[in-house]
Amino acid sequence: MIRVIALVLLTDLAVLAGTVQIRVKDERGQPAAVRLRLRDASGKLIPVRVVKPQPVLMTHPKFADLGVIFDGSVTIDLPDGDLRVLLDRGTEYEPATLNGARLKGVNTVRLRRWMDMAKLGWWSGDLHVHREPSEMPLLIRAADIHMAPVITRWNNARTSPEWKDWREPMQSSIDGNRVWTINNAEDERPWGAALFFNLRRPPDLAPYKSDWPPPVDSWTFRSEGYLDLEKPIWWGAPVVALLAHPDSIGVVNNHFMEEGMLNNEAWGRPRDLSVYPGYRGFADYICMLYARYLSAGLRIPVSAGSANGVLKNGLGYDRVYVHLDGPFSPDAWWSALKAGRSFATNGPMLWLTADGLLPGSILPDTTRSVKVQIEARSREPIDRVDILVDGNVVRTLRPTGGSLRVKASFEAPVQAGSWIAARCFGKTTITARMAHTSPIYVGPVPRRSPGAIRFLREWIGGWREVIRRTPESKLSGERKAAFFALCDRAEAALQ
Image (cartoon, rainbow, N blue to C red; front, side):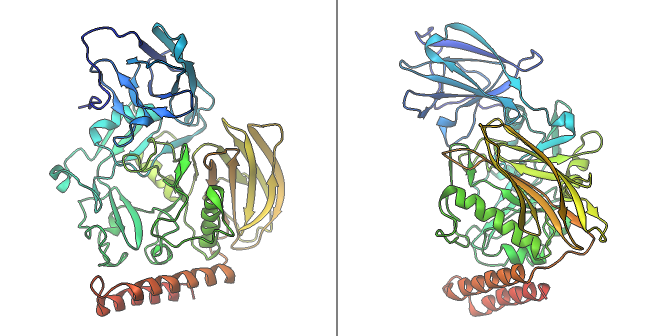
């Protein structure tokens, strides 16, 4: 069932002075599922007050100011004052802003697509979702995304007993191409976090904040489904990357928020703020880490996830686009994501080819020069687009005049084992809008940069120190030895 918002519900006894009905249609003139927010004269978001019980959802169960989700029509009460009503439907639609003082009675709004990625063969997903599965039909339509695996086993969750077991159907869909699943889990502990999708059975997870057991070896269910390394910043992330071979890594992750940013590394490895200051520094740091992983020979595609239900993000704000050659299907989507035919974004759209091939492709190892074609489009002005080869920026495109589109073609030198990728940054003042492609590779065997290998070795050495300093009450000497053996194996993988 769809839950009615209780915290912002008004009575249905009378029509209030500020009561208005808002109807929203999509580009085809059909009723659309959308999000509605209110912003006061100071620019602050304020909770929406719904006039009577309606099939609406909170955008986020913990943050009322993120607004409400409704399907086609909603009746709300507008407080006095200079208010703006904000309507949006995910990344591919132009948002609408209405002057609250001018709204009377019934108001109809038609949202316009500025981009239709599915028509171009690119299908969106959010890999980090903490919502009730019963809420997904409305949420997934309002976010205009196509894949949303819901985390139903989590060692940091106050989950209801119903998720001790998974019941059929494991997978559900709406509109023929919007899918959500329930057979997914998150292991989040002092080492970091990993997401597991499409598992056959609920996994046994260690207790929350438990140092023991270590990752990788305790994941007896690893072979069953899909593994996403949730962020590259965790202390244990290089070890997981080297030994568990993740299918993707969260480059545009839940630290990237719509009107703010978690400008820290949580309990992961802290960045050098003198080198990477501010929220833009965090975005640059994430890009640097991903490049280090790739240059150390770890061919891991990008992914994205919002953590809607936990962090202050709407569903689908951080999303990954996956290219399919044929019709959409869940199996095809997951296979293409694993193959690296993807880019991750919280705003810009970014397309990259090398010699006409998409991300995830492998060029002949005899290739010594590639024709790079790059295009970026955005609802907001673009700051810059970087094209990288083996972690080095070989071309930067800086549009002028608030351009919303960048397109270029050029030759770039490569060698056997190289990787080619692109990233795009938007012009913002309150957060970081970013897109990053998965790489295109030259040859089946990756080049391994000595500098990148040294970087990961130093990181693993830092994690050893974290383990050494862990109190015996949390981690005994014998158990620390097991962690050190895990680090030894990861370092051996760097040989």
